Image 1 (cartoon, rainbow, N blue to C red):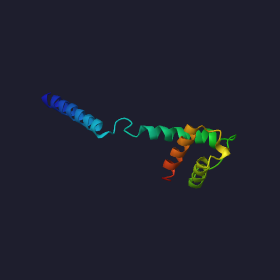
Image 2: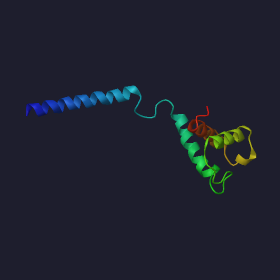
Image 3: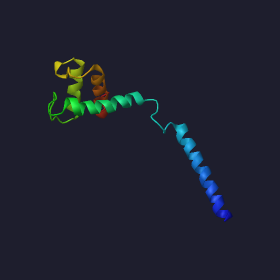
Image 4: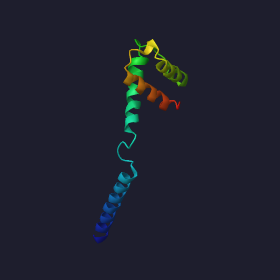
Length: 104
């Protein structure tokens, strides 16, 4: 019985130490770069719902590196084809495409 109790206490202490290590490493939670992740997620949704949908500027387009480069260039040039997107949506689309296709 003492052996079981000892292993239980060692297990609890070990788990407590591991939880502390996770919090200290920054692995828990969003970290310092959550704003960019929000833009990434928002950009992904905007691309799907406002850029490549059947009634969007690029219906049925394959989202690939060339497509990403083209859309980013159109946003930079303030092309009228993407005027339906707000400035925040345009920014989010650029963040998403740059991160997704490593265009930075």
